[in-house]
Image (cartoon, rainbow over all chains, first blue to last red):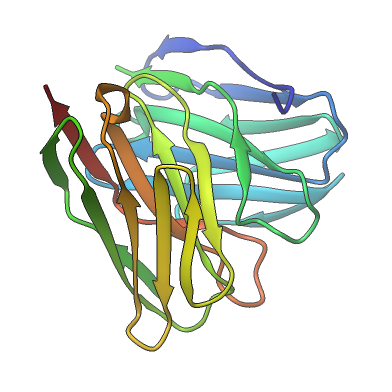
Length: 114
Length: 110
């Protein structure tokens, strides 16, 4: 158990509203990732972080922002949610700095944008 | 850029052997990972091939051939609990990212 908690587990929101998803880890790992999962697309990287205040974009970063003010928390924000952002969002951590091949995932957040 | 292709679905019966292929077009990467995901669950790490060749872990084996831009996951003595989606993934050179394939849904029948 890599000590990863995602909140909320489920959320329903309306188009145009802001939404923040939280990923919390208990083991001070440096690297954290946000993925979204949609049928037919597998897991696609949104943003990732390699330390406090250090973040970078992934494949599908448009419409998303992230923040990491503490090692243990990595926040994903949808500034103005759209229906195309309905998805399952997974947070992941890498236990070994610089070795992303082995990730541990949280339980996911099911987000529905109506 | 990077893209990893997998068959969308594979079916097999209990006790059988199944191979899930992963072909990729990428400018360079460190190795090939495999993940398993049961319906409603989170992806879990299965294996990582840092070098070409076959890696065996119990009933599961994974193979990588960089010259052929190809890898596979081999599942032996299939059990019902192996019914899940399987994803290959690569960490491209000079990045700290992991890029996933589209996933293969394995259905095991009694």
